[in-house]
Length: 230
Image (tube, rainbow, N blue to C red; front, side, top):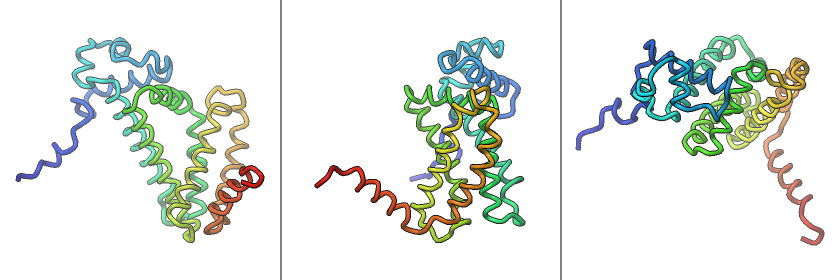
């Protein structure tokens, strides 16, 4: 049996060529619509109007809006990875400094209009679309992995499962600030203080948590919620 060429083994999400003027215009228009008008407006027809193209032209490159989400998230992860290479993955930085910078990067990013609005609308789309839900999950799994790499370096005694749980806790805690201190949110002015607190205490947590401590805390919580005599 002949092998399938690598280029055909994983189909591209759309019929597009990255870097072309048309595709770039479509992607920028899709991002503007999602950020400025929300999930309800995120249709191929609306995107075509935004970039002044025919619906057929947009559909040729991206037959479904899910494909646009796929590419947008891939582009975002690539841009974040480039920032990590420049700002975090430097040999002169200590593990604690790397984790601190990642935390600051994440919270600073939440303050931007793009991130505050984009991910809110992506979650809204994900609630009713399994493909988009899977892509959003994959994106955040990548974020957790980046945090986990730093946590594992800060505290190499932790097991992979403990690193994963702690990374998820840190990520979830940061993402939870979005509706309160994200772009144009009620307490946006407090974000610098929250960032400073997070950078200090999440690094301290990663350094000081002991192997087995998470399981112990989980068991204590479980026992505390059992009814008397249970």
